[in-house]
Length: 332
Image (cartoon, rainbow, N blue to C red; front, side, top):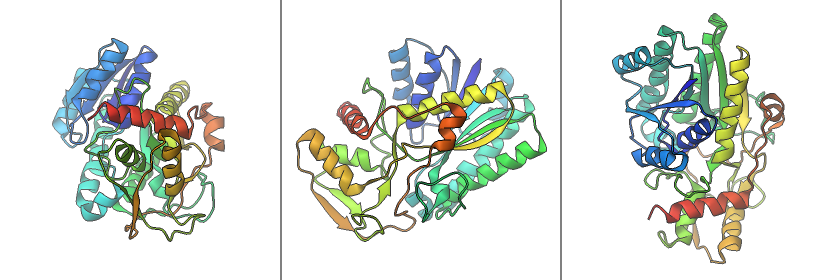
Protein backbone atom coordinates (compact mmCIF):
# COMPACT_ATOMS: atom_id res chain seq x y z
CA UNK A 1 0.00 0.00 0.00
CA UNK A 2 1.04 3.57 -0.70
CA UNK A 3 0.48 5.95 2.23
CA UNK A 4 0.83 9.72 1.95
CA UNK A 5 1.79 11.70 5.06
CA UNK A 6 1.20 15.42 4.66
CA UNK A 7 3.51 17.31 7.01
CA UNK A 8 5.58 14.13 7.23
CA UNK A 9 8.83 16.02 7.83
CA UNK A 10 7.40 17.54 11.01
CA UNK A 11 7.50 16.36 14.60
CA UNK A 12 4.54 13.97 14.77
CA UNK A 13 4.60 13.27 11.04
CA UNK A 14 8.18 12.02 11.07
CA UNK A 15 7.41 9.53 13.85
CA UNK A 16 4.37 8.31 11.91
CA UNK A 17 6.56 7.78 8.84
CA UNK A 18 8.93 5.71 10.96
CA UNK A 19 6.09 3.47 12.17
CA UNK A 20 4.66 3.11 8.66
CA UNK A 21 8.01 1.99 7.28
CA UNK A 22 8.34 -0.55 10.08
CA UNK A 23 5.13 -2.19 8.79
CA UNK A 24 6.55 -2.39 5.25
CA UNK A 25 4.23 0.18 3.72
CA UNK A 26 5.38 2.55 0.96
CA UNK A 27 5.59 6.07 2.36
CA UNK A 28 5.18 9.32 0.45
CA UNK A 29 5.65 12.70 2.14
CA UNK A 30 4.63 16.17 1.03
CA UNK A 31 5.79 19.06 3.22
CA UNK A 32 6.69 22.68 2.50
CA UNK A 33 9.32 22.64 5.29
CA UNK A 34 8.01 25.91 6.75
CA UNK A 35 8.15 24.54 10.30
CA UNK A 36 9.92 21.23 9.76
CA UNK A 37 13.22 19.93 8.45
CA UNK A 38 14.44 17.74 5.60
CA UNK A 39 16.88 16.40 8.19
CA UNK A 40 13.98 14.45 9.70
CA UNK A 41 13.44 12.63 6.39
CA UNK A 42 17.14 11.85 6.18
CA UNK A 43 17.16 10.55 9.77
CA UNK A 44 14.12 8.35 9.18
CA UNK A 45 15.90 6.76 6.23
CA UNK A 46 19.02 6.40 8.36
CA UNK A 47 17.13 4.63 11.15
CA UNK A 48 15.13 2.31 8.88
CA UNK A 49 17.47 1.90 5.87
CA UNK A 50 14.32 2.44 3.77
CA UNK A 51 13.41 5.05 1.21
CA UNK A 52 10.81 7.80 1.58
CA UNK A 53 9.34 9.47 -1.49
CA UNK A 54 9.58 13.16 -0.53
CA UNK A 55 8.20 16.19 -2.34
CA UNK A 56 8.52 19.80 -1.19
CA UNK A 57 4.93 20.92 -1.73
CA UNK A 58 2.46 23.30 -0.09
CA UNK A 59 -1.07 21.89 0.25
CA UNK A 60 -2.44 25.28 -0.84
CA UNK A 61 -1.01 24.65 -4.33
CA UNK A 62 -3.94 22.96 -6.09
CA UNK A 63 -2.16 22.29 -9.36
CA UNK A 64 0.84 20.56 -7.79
CA UNK A 65 -1.43 18.56 -5.48
CA UNK A 66 -3.46 17.33 -8.44
CA UNK A 67 -0.28 16.47 -10.32
CA UNK A 68 1.01 14.49 -7.35
CA UNK A 69 -2.14 12.41 -6.98
CA UNK A 70 -2.43 11.77 -10.72
CA UNK A 71 1.18 10.57 -10.81
CA UNK A 72 1.10 8.34 -7.71
CA UNK A 73 -1.60 5.86 -6.71
CA UNK A 74 -2.17 6.76 -3.06
CA UNK A 75 -4.28 4.34 -1.00
CA UNK A 76 -4.61 6.40 2.20
CA UNK A 77 -3.59 9.78 3.60
CA UNK A 78 -2.35 10.76 7.05
CA UNK A 79 -3.02 14.50 7.20
CA UNK A 80 -0.78 16.54 9.52
CA UNK A 81 0.17 19.52 7.34
CA UNK A 82 -0.85 22.74 9.02
CA UNK A 83 -0.04 25.50 11.50
CA UNK A 84 -0.19 24.45 15.16
CA UNK A 85 0.19 27.31 17.64
CA UNK A 86 -2.77 28.65 19.63
CA UNK A 87 -0.93 31.85 20.53
CA UNK A 88 0.35 32.59 17.03
CA UNK A 89 -3.13 31.99 15.62
CA UNK A 90 -4.55 34.78 17.78
CA UNK A 91 -2.05 37.23 16.27
CA UNK A 92 -2.43 35.90 12.69
CA UNK A 93 -5.83 34.21 12.29
CA UNK A 94 -5.86 34.59 8.51
CA UNK A 95 -2.85 32.28 8.18
CA UNK A 96 -4.57 29.51 10.13
CA UNK A 97 -7.75 29.56 8.05
CA UNK A 98 -5.74 29.79 4.83
CA UNK A 99 -3.29 26.96 5.55
CA UNK A 100 -5.35 24.67 7.76
CA UNK A 101 -8.86 24.97 6.33
CA UNK A 102 -8.34 25.86 2.67
CA UNK A 103 -5.28 23.62 2.44
CA UNK A 104 -7.31 20.68 3.74
CA UNK A 105 -10.11 21.34 1.25
CA UNK A 106 -7.55 21.31 -1.56
CA UNK A 107 -6.19 17.99 -0.31
CA UNK A 108 -9.63 16.39 -0.13
CA UNK A 109 -10.53 17.58 -3.63
CA UNK A 110 -7.33 16.07 -5.02
CA UNK A 111 -8.02 12.81 -3.20
CA UNK A 112 -11.55 12.68 -4.55
CA UNK A 113 -10.38 13.09 -8.15
CA UNK A 114 -8.25 9.96 -7.90
CA UNK A 115 -10.72 7.90 -5.82
CA UNK A 116 -8.52 7.95 -2.72
CA UNK A 117 -11.10 7.85 0.08
CA UNK A 118 -9.20 6.89 3.25
CA UNK A 119 -8.03 9.72 5.50
CA UNK A 120 -6.73 10.17 9.03
CA UNK A 121 -6.80 13.77 10.24
CA UNK A 122 -4.53 14.68 13.14
CA UNK A 123 -6.80 17.13 14.95
CA UNK A 124 -6.23 18.70 18.36
CA UNK A 125 -7.63 18.59 21.87
CA UNK A 126 -7.76 22.39 21.57
CA UNK A 127 -11.28 21.95 20.12
CA UNK A 128 -12.47 21.16 23.67
CA UNK A 129 -11.41 24.55 25.05
CA UNK A 130 -12.06 25.09 28.76
CA UNK A 131 -14.05 22.23 30.29
CA UNK A 132 -15.32 21.62 33.81
CA UNK A 133 -15.59 17.81 33.54
CA UNK A 134 -12.44 15.68 33.67
CA UNK A 135 -11.21 13.54 32.09
CA UNK A 136 -12.53 14.92 28.79
CA UNK A 137 -14.47 12.49 26.59
CA UNK A 138 -15.24 12.83 22.89
CA UNK A 139 -18.92 13.52 23.66
CA UNK A 140 -18.52 16.80 25.58
CA UNK A 141 -19.54 20.10 24.02
CA UNK A 142 -16.77 21.79 22.04
CA UNK A 143 -15.53 25.24 23.08
CA UNK A 144 -12.61 26.22 20.82
CA UNK A 145 -11.11 29.49 22.04
CA UNK A 146 -8.48 30.33 19.40
CA UNK A 147 -8.33 30.51 15.59
CA UNK A 148 -6.12 27.42 15.67
CA UNK A 149 -8.72 25.45 17.62
CA UNK A 150 -11.56 26.73 15.46
CA UNK A 151 -9.69 25.81 12.27
CA UNK A 152 -9.45 22.23 13.55
CA UNK A 153 -13.15 22.16 14.39
CA UNK A 154 -14.07 23.51 10.95
CA UNK A 155 -12.04 20.71 9.34
CA UNK A 156 -13.70 18.12 11.58
CA UNK A 157 -17.17 19.38 10.64
CA UNK A 158 -16.28 19.42 6.96
CA UNK A 159 -15.06 15.81 7.18
CA UNK A 160 -18.29 14.74 8.86
CA UNK A 161 -20.32 16.45 6.12
CA UNK A 162 -18.17 14.81 3.47
CA UNK A 163 -18.70 11.37 4.95
CA UNK A 164 -22.45 12.02 5.30
CA UNK A 165 -22.70 12.88 1.60
CA UNK A 166 -20.51 10.00 0.40
CA UNK A 167 -20.31 6.79 2.43
CA UNK A 168 -17.31 5.54 0.43
CA UNK A 169 -15.09 7.80 2.53
CA UNK A 170 -13.32 6.20 5.48
CA UNK A 171 -12.21 8.85 7.98
CA UNK A 172 -10.50 8.84 11.35
CA UNK A 173 -10.28 12.07 13.37
CA UNK A 174 -7.66 11.89 16.13
CA UNK A 175 -7.85 14.63 18.76
CA UNK A 176 -4.28 14.68 20.04
CA UNK A 177 -3.46 16.16 23.42
CA UNK A 178 0.13 17.32 24.10
CA UNK A 179 2.58 15.22 22.10
CA UNK A 180 6.03 15.08 23.67
CA UNK A 181 9.17 12.96 23.83
CA UNK A 182 11.16 11.60 20.90
CA UNK A 183 12.30 8.41 19.20
CA UNK A 184 14.76 6.36 21.29
CA UNK A 185 17.52 7.01 18.75
CA UNK A 186 17.50 10.71 19.67
CA UNK A 187 17.53 11.53 15.95
CA UNK A 188 13.93 12.73 15.82
CA UNK A 189 12.28 15.32 18.02
CA UNK A 190 10.76 18.77 18.08
CA UNK A 191 12.23 21.47 15.87
CA UNK A 192 14.23 23.77 18.17
CA UNK A 193 12.95 26.77 16.20
CA UNK A 194 9.29 25.79 16.52
CA UNK A 195 8.53 25.04 20.16
CA UNK A 196 7.07 28.26 21.52
CA UNK A 197 4.21 26.30 23.11
CA UNK A 198 6.15 23.22 24.18
CA UNK A 199 6.68 23.09 27.93
CA UNK A 200 8.75 19.91 27.96
CA UNK A 201 11.16 21.05 25.25
CA UNK A 202 11.60 24.36 27.06
CA UNK A 203 12.31 22.52 30.29
CA UNK A 204 14.92 20.36 28.59
CA UNK A 205 16.69 23.44 27.27
CA UNK A 206 16.76 25.02 30.71
CA UNK A 207 18.35 21.82 32.01
CA UNK A 208 20.86 21.85 29.14
CA UNK A 209 21.78 25.46 29.89
CA UNK A 210 20.34 26.96 26.70
CA UNK A 211 17.78 29.02 28.66
CA UNK A 212 18.38 30.50 32.12
CA UNK A 213 14.82 29.95 33.35
CA UNK A 214 11.34 28.75 32.48
CA UNK A 215 8.49 31.22 32.03
CA UNK A 216 5.22 29.97 33.56
CA UNK A 217 2.12 31.67 32.20
CA UNK A 218 -0.18 31.92 35.19
CA UNK A 219 -0.11 30.90 38.86
CA UNK A 220 -3.82 31.50 39.52
CA UNK A 221 -5.44 28.76 37.45
CA UNK A 222 -8.29 26.75 38.94
CA UNK A 223 -5.98 23.73 39.42
CA UNK A 224 -4.47 22.04 42.49
CA UNK A 225 -1.29 24.17 42.45
CA UNK A 226 -2.45 27.15 40.39
CA UNK A 227 -0.47 26.28 37.25
CA UNK A 228 -1.91 24.90 33.98
CA UNK A 229 -2.50 21.13 33.76
CA UNK A 230 -1.93 19.17 30.55
CA UNK A 231 -2.01 15.62 29.22
CA UNK A 232 1.43 14.72 27.84
CA UNK A 233 1.52 11.70 25.51
CA UNK A 234 4.67 10.23 24.00
CA UNK A 235 4.96 10.99 20.30
CA UNK A 236 5.75 7.33 19.54
CA UNK A 237 2.44 6.37 21.19
CA UNK A 238 0.73 9.02 19.05
CA UNK A 239 2.30 7.53 15.92
CA UNK A 240 1.19 4.02 16.87
CA UNK A 241 -2.36 5.28 17.41
CA UNK A 242 -2.35 6.54 13.82
CA UNK A 243 -1.20 3.12 12.58
CA UNK A 244 -3.92 1.30 14.55
CA UNK A 245 -6.51 3.77 13.23
CA UNK A 246 -5.39 3.14 9.67
CA UNK A 247 -5.76 -0.62 10.13
CA UNK A 248 -9.34 -0.11 11.33
CA UNK A 249 -10.26 2.19 8.45
CA UNK A 250 -8.86 -0.22 5.87
CA UNK A 251 -11.03 -3.05 7.23
CA UNK A 252 -14.30 -1.12 7.08
CA UNK A 253 -15.51 2.19 5.63
CA UNK A 254 -16.55 4.38 8.53
CA UNK A 255 -15.89 7.63 10.40
CA UNK A 256 -14.80 8.00 14.01
CA UNK A 257 -13.43 10.60 16.43
CA UNK A 258 -11.09 9.56 19.25
CA UNK A 259 -8.85 11.10 21.89
CA UNK A 260 -5.10 10.45 21.87
CA UNK A 261 -3.44 11.21 25.20
CA UNK A 262 -2.05 9.50 28.29
CA UNK A 263 -5.20 10.03 30.36
CA UNK A 264 -3.42 11.85 33.20
CA UNK A 265 -2.98 15.58 33.82
CA UNK A 266 0.33 17.07 34.97
CA UNK A 267 0.76 20.66 36.14
CA UNK A 268 3.69 22.86 35.14
CA UNK A 269 5.12 22.70 38.66
CA UNK A 270 4.82 18.91 38.63
CA UNK A 271 6.76 18.75 35.38
CA UNK A 272 9.48 20.99 36.84
CA UNK A 273 9.80 18.66 39.85
CA UNK A 274 9.94 15.65 37.53
CA UNK A 275 12.79 17.14 35.49
CA UNK A 276 14.63 18.05 38.68
CA UNK A 277 14.24 14.48 39.94
CA UNK A 278 15.55 12.96 36.70
CA UNK A 279 18.43 15.39 36.11
CA UNK A 280 19.36 16.27 39.72
CA UNK A 281 19.44 19.91 38.62
CA UNK A 282 17.57 22.92 40.00
CA UNK A 283 15.26 24.60 37.50
CA UNK A 284 14.64 28.32 37.88
CA UNK A 285 11.29 29.74 36.80
CA UNK A 286 9.31 32.95 36.75
CA UNK A 287 5.56 33.48 36.78
CA UNK A 288 4.11 35.68 34.03
CA UNK A 289 0.56 36.75 33.20
CA UNK A 290 -1.71 34.16 31.67
CA UNK A 291 -1.96 34.22 27.89
CA UNK A 292 -5.12 34.74 25.87
CA UNK A 293 -6.53 31.42 24.72
CA UNK A 294 -4.67 29.26 27.25
CA UNK A 295 -6.76 26.50 28.83
CA UNK A 296 -6.42 25.92 32.59
CA UNK A 297 -6.79 22.14 32.61
CA UNK A 298 -7.02 19.43 29.95
CA UNK A 299 -6.58 15.66 30.02
CA UNK A 300 -8.17 12.84 28.07
CA UNK A 301 -10.71 10.13 28.68
CA UNK A 302 -9.26 7.22 26.68
CA UNK A 303 -11.93 4.58 27.28
CA UNK A 304 -13.46 4.83 23.79
CA UNK A 305 -10.05 5.00 22.08
CA UNK A 306 -8.72 1.90 23.84
CA UNK A 307 -11.80 -0.08 22.88
CA UNK A 308 -12.04 1.08 19.27
CA UNK A 309 -8.46 0.86 18.00
CA UNK A 310 -6.97 -1.55 20.55
CA UNK A 311 -4.41 1.00 21.71
CA UNK A 312 -2.84 1.95 25.02
CA UNK A 313 -0.05 4.47 25.67
CA UNK A 314 3.10 2.49 26.55
CA UNK A 315 5.41 5.30 27.67
CA UNK A 316 5.18 7.18 30.97
CA UNK A 317 6.08 10.74 31.91
CA UNK A 318 9.66 9.78 32.87
CA UNK A 319 10.17 8.23 29.41
CA UNK A 320 8.90 11.43 27.83
CA UNK A 321 11.29 13.62 29.83
CA UNK A 322 14.33 11.40 29.25
CA UNK A 323 13.69 11.00 25.51
CA UNK A 324 13.14 14.74 25.08
CA UNK A 325 16.44 15.50 26.81
CA UNK A 326 18.29 13.02 24.61
CA UNK A 327 16.85 14.43 21.39
CA UNK A 328 17.56 18.03 22.44
CA UNK A 329 21.20 17.18 23.18
CA UNK A 330 21.56 16.17 19.54
CA UNK A 331 20.15 19.47 18.28
CA UNK A 332 22.67 21.88 19.80
